[in-house]
Each structure stands twice: as C-alpha cells, then as structure tokens.
Amino acid sequence: MSFLTISHLEKSFGATRVVKDFNLDIEKGEFISLLGPSGCGKTTVLRMVAGFESPSAGSITIDGREVSSLKPNQRNIGMVFQAYALFPNLTVAQNVGFGLKVQGTPAREIAPRVAEMLKLIGLPEMGARYPYQLSGGQQQRVALARALAPKPQVLLLDEPLSALDAKVRVSLRNEIRMIQKELGITTIFVTHDQEEALSMSDRIVVMHQGIADQIGTPFEIYNTPATRFVAGFVGTLTTLQAQVIDGAAGHVRIGANDLWIYREVTGPEITLGLRPEMLRLGVADFDAGEAQLGGTILDVDFLGSVIRLKVDLGGETLAVDLFNNTRAAPPEVGSQVSLALHPSDALVIGG
Ligand code: ATP
Image 1 (cartoon, rainbow, N blue to C red):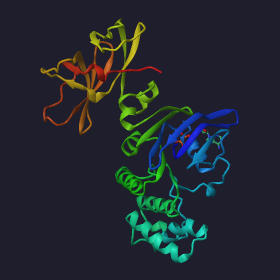
Image 2: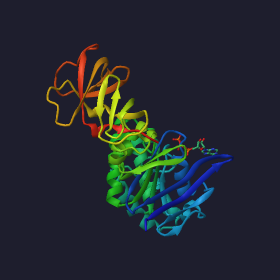
Image 3: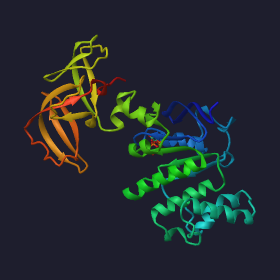
Image 4: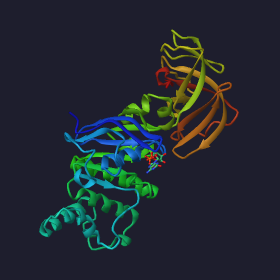
C-alpha cells in the first residue's frame, strides 16, 4: 500500500468544481510535483492534503490513517509557502524552533534540533539574525528548516521558489532536492514552472482544469505526453496538421512533404507534434530510417545556447533548434533547407 493515497478527491467552491476525481498514490520518500497553469486546482489539492481546505468528497490517507477530518496540526505535515511567511519579530533560531515549542518540546531538546536544521540548510551561523537581515533565498531556506524541524511525515511545498530571482531559484531547487533525498521525506511540490518540475521530481502530475491529465516520470511526461494539453504545456512543441494518405502504413503528408511515421493512424487528418530539438538541419548524412523534410527558413532567433529556426514546410511552420556548438553562421532567412527526423520522434497528438 502507498504511503500517501488520495482517492476520488473533489472540491467545489459554490457551483464550480475546481478539483475533479483526483487520484494519486505516493510512495514513501517520493518527490511529486503538481504542475499546471494558474487556476488548474493544484494549490487546492495541496491545501486539502494540509487540512486548510476540506474536500467536497474523497479521501486522503497518510501512512494508513485517514486524515481528511483532522486539523492541520494533527496531520504531521510540514509546509513551505510562496511568500516567506517567517515571523518577523522572531530570530531565525526562534522561527526554526517554533513548531517544536508549540508541541511542548523541552528547551534543551529544541536548541540542538535547531542547530542541526540550520546546518542542514547551510546557515549554521545565522540563528541570531532576524528575517529582515536575510536574503529571499535564505528566508526560504529558514522556512524549510522550520517546516522540517518537528520531523513531519510529509513535506508540502507551495511554489516556494517563485518569488526568488532566477539564479537563486536554480540553486535552491537543487538544494531542496538534496535535503529531501537526504531525509527521505515524502514531498508534494506545487509549481507552474515545467523546468522546476522536470528537474526536481520523481514523478509529475500534470493538472488541467481540476483533472490530473497525466501522472508519470519527467521522462515519460516529456517524451510521451498523454494528451494534447500535456504535450503543449511541457516543453516546446510545434503542432502540424498532417493529411493521412495511407492510415494503415502511417503514411501522411505535411505541406509538400511525405512522411511515414510507421504507426497506424485514422481519419482524413491527424495532428503531429514535433519538438524543436528532434530535428537536424542540412545534413547530407541521413541515418537509415530517418525521414527528410524540405522547407524554407522564415526566421532565425539567436537564443545563446541554441538557435531557433522557423521553417516553412509549404503551409505549415516548424520550430527547429540548432545547438550553438559548430561556430558556423546560422542559415539565412529565405534559404532552402532539408531537415532530418526520426519518425518515432513525431508525436501523434490526441486527447
Ligand atoms: P495558482 O497557481 O494561480 O495558485 P492553482 O492551480 O493553484 O493556481 P487554485 O489556487 O487551486 O489553482 O484554484 C483553482 C480554482 O479555484 C481557481 O479558479 C480559483 O479561483 C478557485 N478558488 C480557489 N480557492 C477558492 C476559494 N476559497 N473560493 C472560491 N474559489 C476559489
């Protein structure tokens, strides 16, 4: 049996159902991200697990115990919020020890635990400071230490990185993941940032309009998106309309190009999804089995590590990324190019 089980969870505000038949089994020590656009219901799911919101229907069990009717402080959960939410009038050490004090832990036990937590988050010398004397990243680390100090069974993180600047965000996400692994604590992380979810998670739940569209490893979510929404939300994807020439053989036509995708398809038309990094440009040495697409360069966008091309395939436009590792000048707008593609990399988008 899973460590944390969410079954048929529902939430309505008035007549609006914002979480619909949400089901998730989480193993002990897993790092799970709830990923989706603003308003998809991910925070509402997290708040129901925390006990700040009561479900309209369904159940939540942690370590075999039904928690839906328990108060937040009875659930053995630690939580970190988007806004720093430290007590401004307490020192860092007092903030970190706050939960333990509330639980009635003797002072002689609080001090070493606080020291241990400050060491864990890499701020061993900062116990006497006040929150205003810390950077945003440091404040979030203290918030993490405060959540972890009482040794919760589950850690809930509600967009804890979104108020930080880009560099701090990346270093802190690595740090959070390291600490989470070190402690082996079961964690649910809410984010709308796909890169965060892809880089940090054991598994990702992609949410859309209150529903879990797909649950899978980062690799599965990116490479085999289950729905059109997941395909479009995670990573960059060009969708193309392809005319079906011979459905049984997987023979389709995109603009002026014939393509065999070697999968049976139905209908007069299908939608294909191609990721920009799946295409190679202007190569004379096509691999066996690679398809060729011919087109005209419409636009060249220099992005630093990659150069993104827009290529017209005869009515359909495709994004193509070239790694900026050849020192060759990018192709010019208007030039004719041929692109190589492994047919198995073309996603057939349904759902
Ligand atoms: P965000 O990233 O913007 O927080 P989210 O995916 O976390 O988005 P939720 O905060 O879970 O989304 O909100 C889901 C929907 O429920 C939204 O349409 C929101 O307006 C609505 N909602 C959330 N809380 C309440 C509430 N207390 N009363 C009424 N509607 C609410």
